[in-house]
Every structure is written in C-alpha cells, then in structure tokens.
Image (cartoon, rainbow, N blue to C red; front, side):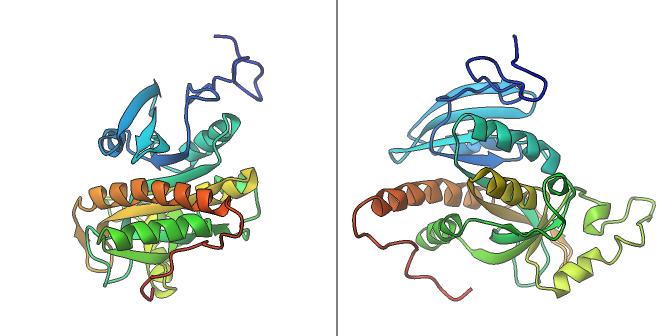
Length: 277
C-alpha cells in the first residue's frame, strides 16, 4: 500500500492509514464509541449495516437507522486515539460526530445507569493542547446537545446535562490512588475540585473531540452511560443501552432537523418541550 506522504498518510484514492476508510465509505453522523465491542451493539439497532473496515482498535460500519444514513467508528480509549480518528474522518468528508461512551458521575443525585449529555468539557487532557491554548473552551455543538436531549425525552431515558471533565488518565488523573495508595499532590484534590464546581462527570475523550471538531468545522457532541458514581462510591456496568438508543435516535433527529432547515422559512432549531435542567 503506497501512501502520499508522511504528513498525510493516505493513498491516492483517499484511503486513510489508521481507519482504512476512504471518501464515500461512511455517511451521515458518525458515532464514536471507545470500546470496539460497543460497535456491534450500536449497529444491532440499525435497519441495515455494512462493515467497511477493521484495523487495530478502529472498526467502522455504515448503514441506515430508521431510513437515516448513519455510521460508527470505534476509537479505543483516550484523547490521543480520538486525535487520530477525527482528522481522518474529516478527510473523507464527515462533518458530524457523537461520542457514545461511559463515565463516572461526580454528583450524588446521578444514578448508575443514567446518561450524561455533555455541554462542554474541562480539558484535563493534554492532547488538545497541541492545537490550542489550555484556556481555549471545549464546547459541544448546541444542535447535537438538543437532539440528544430530545432523544432521551422521547424514549424515557434518565439523563443529566452539563459540563464534563475529560482526563487522559483513568486513575491518577481522576483522583484515584494506585493500589499502593500513592497519588500525586496535584491529583489528590481533582475529584473534589470538579465536584464542587458542579462538573457532572469524569470521562476521557470529550474535550479533545469538541476542541478538534471545532477547529475542523465539524459538529460534535457526547453522551455517556454512568458506570460509576464517585460521590457515592458505587460502580456498575449499566446504561450502555440507554446511551446507544439516545445516540441512534439523535442521528435521526439531526437528519430531520437539517432537512427542515433547508426548507424555506422553517425556524425549528431545537426541541421545544424540555424539562428544566
């Protein structure tokens, strides 16, 4: 396989080095689960699906959900992996992405199995710092936020909306000590700092996805199932099906919204019946 250059490792027909997809292979909004095994669960709800590529942790399908074009690419864990995925998706013509992940809640009222929809993210990772100042905001696209809220409302999925904290570390970076009890002095207070400032959850990818998508001119959002609650010290693998259902439904909602916006005089830009959040 011959690639164009070291700076842009793609073939003449646009096949991307890591994702092994080319223009036309994927369509619509691309869902971004971290876990490659979550891909099968996502596409099981689709009307039709076609596997396009599998290389390392990156598995890609395209298809239709309720007649709407949709795709999925697994990213693996962490912001550095997403930093590979986004430019390669953009290179093949993708404009919208939604992270479908898991997280740890920081507030007592958030229950295991609920989902968190991110409006923005605290950049506790440093992959995004290769592109922008640390003070540059990491903000989700408002239309994707509203589509995810509508999907949860219409499917009776318990959800919370707010700011996420994205760390490139699962243990120390989220205030968890090592098995020996060791934790750095700059990490031991991070959980309390985030909790007291009203942050909803910890996860590892959203801030990079929001930041890089903004630079690339893409719309991005994130929804995560709550596997842990740090405030109550509970852990349970629940809610994945809720996050998947909401993400698939949000793609349909976004597609219909975009179709409506293309009609002359239509002013529907968000869901009008939303509970106080």
